[in-house]
Amino acid sequence: MAKRYFIHTFGCQMNESDSQRMGEALARAGWGPTETAESADLVLVNTCAIREKAEDKLYSALGRYRLLKASRGTRIGVAGCVAQQEKEKLLQRAPYVDFVLGPDQLARVPDLAEQGGVETGWVDSEEYVFPQADPQSSRGRATAFVTAMKGCDNVCSFCVVPYTRGREVSRPYAEIIREIAALVNVGVREVTLIGQNVNSYSGGCSFADLIRRVDEVPGLQRIRFTTSHPMDLSPELVRCFFEVKRLMPHFHLPVQHGADTVLTRMRRKYTIAQYEARIAQLPPGVALTSDIICGFPGETDDEHAQNLAFLRRTHYDSLFSFIYSPRPHTGALLKLGSGTEWAEIPRELALQRLEEVQALQRARTLQRHAALTGTEVEVLVENAQGPKRFGRTRENVAAHFEGDAQVGDVVRVSVEKTGLMALDGTQTGILNQAPFTEVRPRRHLAVVSA
Ligand code: SF4
Image 1 (cartoon, rainbow, N blue to C red):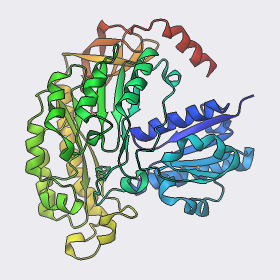
Image 2: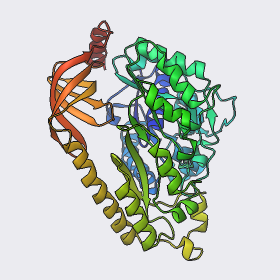
Image 3: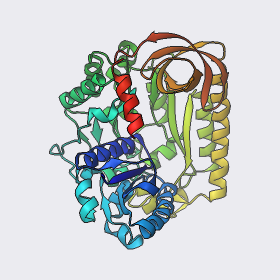
Image 4: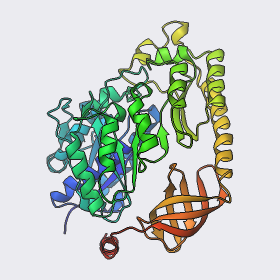
């Protein structure tokens, strides 16, 4: 019987995509997936280093998997950003881990699973060969992530990414288009182009040109992308939101803070006035989302008040907000505590500020969703179980509804109830049927055999 693997993924879309590539590499070497860690011969933890809490979660998960190793000899591997950051040190802290694998070494996972060891070499040049998605592993799914670039050349003072993912490298556009065409061929209807700083893409054309090329792939219904830096938002990219019909009206454009003085300490390279001028260019109806950090070193009451004032006048559809987490190697950590400007904010105060930010956004998101009650929204079906369906609106809002549509269909949903996280409703019509009806029996078989 084939040996079985289980991948536990923390963090962002990049990690989700990397986990899929590692699963494909293991499958090529004869491994099969399993649903639980308890039934696996190999447990691979794909880690996130963006906040200390994510790192803590890794060590508590490893504590649980260690028991499986003791009881049934399960091999344990650690991949992703913490693997890259800690390298051999991870084996000192968790000596029961068999191997450590950095994000540029995904293809090595079958060898390391057998032999153990540490592989965290970086390839931050055009020599880097992006792992190619196996379209078959996306058969039966409506959506897929497609890597456009990796790494980041910015040095935001709070962010560990440049130290865990290296310099920016863009994937040649022809390779991206080929991958998307192959995904569409097995039934995928929406792609999200991903990269740490995706709008600084330069793989033979600009990012705006890449979107226009993706738009030409026949059969594709929806295009999304994430994540973007405000300084790389070009007028051409703004024009795409007006002109490229299959580019969905949702833009995640992290601002991080609403006070210029904090943005300077964060090394974000823009002012709030510049950010506001840029978002003002977007067409009406584009849902805007963002990230906010509360309790950044030295954040004064006045800076926090500026942050709240900015959020009150900027109508984000939703917001990811966190308290500042000191990360190894970063500029902010090096300066933390060195004078008033970099004073550490007591945790209680940071939490209180975070709660104020979240309360403000909660009210706004609830209000935005409530305004959709009684209207009809367009949803791409991602999941179908009995009469229950799940999908996302064009603006990327989650929607649960009852209906008979298949995965991959684009439907109209009448919104009956709304909450903070999702809309609830009933399917009222099918706008665009998934053309790959022959896919369905195969998907069914795949589910049965899994
Ligand atoms: S642009 Fe984003 S990924 Fe790059 S350093 Fe800044 S926060 Fe990190």
